[in-house]
Image 1: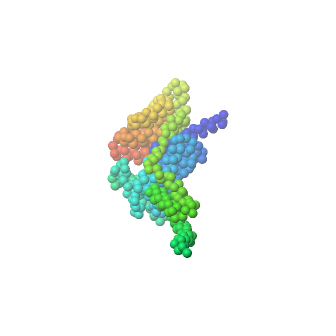
Image 2: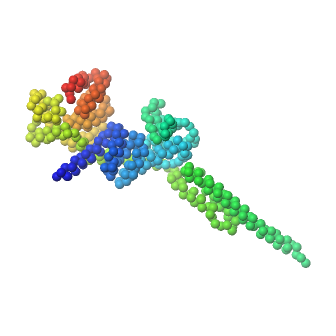
Image 3: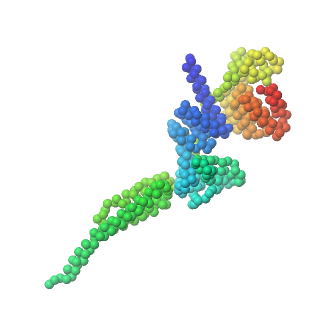
Amino acid sequence: MKYILIALLSINLYASIKTDMLELYKNKKYKEVCREGFDNFQTYKKDEQYVSIYAFGCLNADYIDRLTVPIAALKYSKEARANATYFSVILMQKKMLYHALADGYNINNLKLPSTDYILSKVFDMYVKLKKHNKKFYIFKDKDNKKLMYKLYILKDGQRVPKMVIEEYIDSKLIKQHTYW
Amino acid sequence: MINIRELEQRWIKYKIKSYIPYGVALSAVFVLSLTVYFLQNDKPKKEKQTLHVEKVQPAKQIVVQKQQVVKKATKVEKKPQTIQPVKTIKKQPTVVRTEKTNIIKPSMNFIEEIENQPMQIIEEKPQQKKQHIVEEKVIEKNMVVEVVPQEVVQVQQEEKVVEKKQPKKMIKISRESSHGDINKLVKRFKKTNSPQLSLFIAKKYYDMGNYHQSYNYALITNQIDYNIEPSWIIFSKSLVKLGEKEQAISTLRKYIQHTQSNNAQLLLDDIVSGKFR
């Protein structure tokens, strides 16, 4: 009886963690989702719904490097594999773009799969450029003419330079994404 | 008689034969130097990973030309050792050759799956659990328990004491909707995205004592339409119940500044004075 109660309680708690994370996700508290997912990952790493929401939380919080763990865990279903591929592409594009900006790595005309994520959009536009010697790059969104992206590398005296993508609508800064 | 012409022809043949080793050696050196040149050019390509189709194709052409030169120059040297690197060049740009860019889209079905799971009840605090116990008892007895509206929280803590202390101001506590019903409403809301429905859900959750969810749905309602007064009231009440009194006060003050709402002012006064806890 005691064990049944414990089991029931743990199931309830488990479900509540997922729903809590979902609520946080809906309220756009992505950092909290990512943090919570990371904290409880070892316990629920075989639950792909849990891992998926954890990964999307990290993605929307711009914690791209943290996607490595969910990428490895998402493999049991078709949907999970699709998401793992999606995250992998973004992770690779982030690394390549960062390397290109920071070290002059040549990614001219490189063709990779694309995604709807901002980093992918900027990556696609960057590789199509002929010259890559500017201090910053301005790209216009294909679908939304008012939306512009500014890409640059920030060397603020810290150990690692940071790659910054800024989103502008009508020349007003609406969001800043920082990666390193 | 010495046949001079024959001798001259033989001499020419001899001379030609004597030059053959030099020719072979020269062509070999030429081929070797070409090989070294291509090998050296090949390494930086690997490092840079410029997997560019246009760049790779000329390399192939050069190598094919080189093959022809080798064949013409020396029929003796048939070993295509120098062509080996070309094969590796061919294998490199496998990723690049697809002209069309595949767009990968994420699959978000898991969100619906989580929402539709039967074990969707949010982890409840001990206080809320007590309230549910009270409600269940009410249902069992087919009775309606009447308690003070402001004291609902106290009922959660000390139900019996509250019932005895203030029996005059009464409201009905009854379990009108179960989690299943709310889930149906939530599904309907997702389809319609109606602020009235989300407000209704927020109220239901609030009545059930699930202040976390009532806060969420009031917030959603406000995001859809920020002019719905009851939504702000529920939002602030939920905040107070969740222990975020200061935030509730600041939210109400901002709302009052914006709308001059009397109900909001009354609630604010109650929260500040401690009547509403």
